[in-house]
Image (cartoon, rainbow over all chains, first blue to last red; front, side):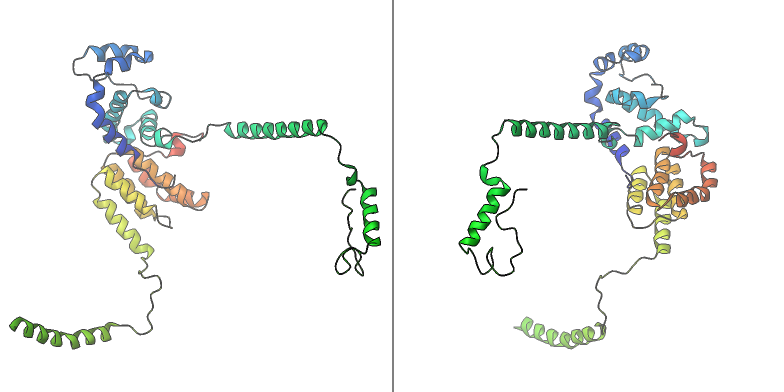
Length: 186
Length: 139
């Protein structure tokens, strides 16, 4: 974001190079846009294939839907507009000029929509919850732990180990032994 | 044969000179760890003011802006003014607005940006430039 981009230059260049091929499908392209009904008929009937001027107020809402021909036409309009004294430009014209060049479309489109963070958070919570449900379900149908996993059994094991003098150097029967021996269950 | 002799003569003639030159130019105890001379902020500003004054088309202005804003410093108001005037010369309103956005990104805090805007207020009024905050107050 901090570096200024050359997007406008490159898009206009690309659009201009693709123009001849796309002018041919002008009629079909503009028919899809019913909100341009008045301009569609005039541009389709004109032999040169030029599009009638597109109103540039509120261009933010329409820009994504424009065909490349319409975008070229807007670019050309704005180019002429920006040659005027900038004090004469209306707010709409200024906004259109800025939006077309640096607005959040094309390479500058934001990668996430508003509300995406909440959606991601909720689905993560749901997944963790599902994992918990699976864990508890498996736990409820699993057999009980073996009899050796009780405190009594393990204390008895300790006594037996002391009786047998197991590991007298470092282990359970060594001098001053502080550990728990075999006890691991509570 | 003659070429050979000439070659030897030239070589012997050249050798002391080379040796002398290296001895003279080798600096004592000068170790350039990071090589290059540092450009001062003033000369940076001068360089870019001149660049923007001479920029002829939109591509060049935007290329200069990319380079200028890629350094670890905020371009001085003189550079910003020259850039905005360059944008005016190439008739690109959007780039002029974008320059101020770039300044906003580069400064450390809001008050610095306000200071830039205050400093360049006369320029804005002269050219009829509204900033992005004025175009899109909500965002």
